[in-house]
Image (cartoon, rainbow, N blue to C red; front, top):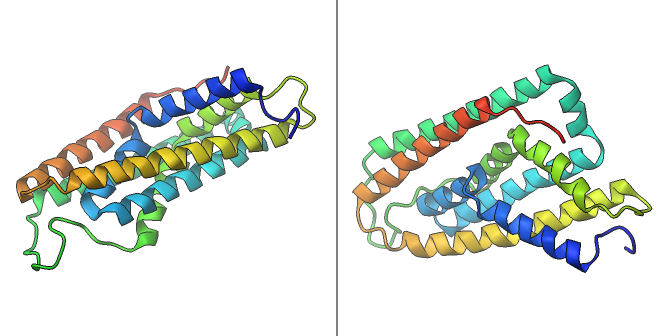
Length: 220
């Protein structure tokens, strides 16, 4: 892989920037935490894996120029932007409905307050939340080129390797976040707390949708 990846100094900067990106609360961070609190570690892991599958899609798009193609066709970009915002609003409204709904009685052997649903449903939610966010596509297209070595024998290969690094590091971070959120979820003792968490999460998702609609990503 000689010449395809940045040197040690640049690599450290890259890793630090990815960590800051992951730790900044946004749709991916919020979805991972909310699904863990609602459905337990299994739901959080499914959402986290779906989110990082979406990052794989964006990395491939950046490597092969699809994100640049979107930049050249504002109408296509606007359609993706509206679709992403609509999906975030749909998620927020779903959490709002959960906030208004009282929990059903839980059997003695069950886990209190957990919302169970199939693994693939949470995976798909994470995937769509990430893929339908054009800001992520522009981030990949604007961020990765800064770390492609000047003398690389293949820019596409460098893009793919850096994208794989970002996805791997993000996966580790989100799984650690799931573990922390799962531990915190055991502290919830009342249905009122659950409903407040859902209500707050729903408002935050709708707020993220509005911010996405106001955003006007510009490539450097």
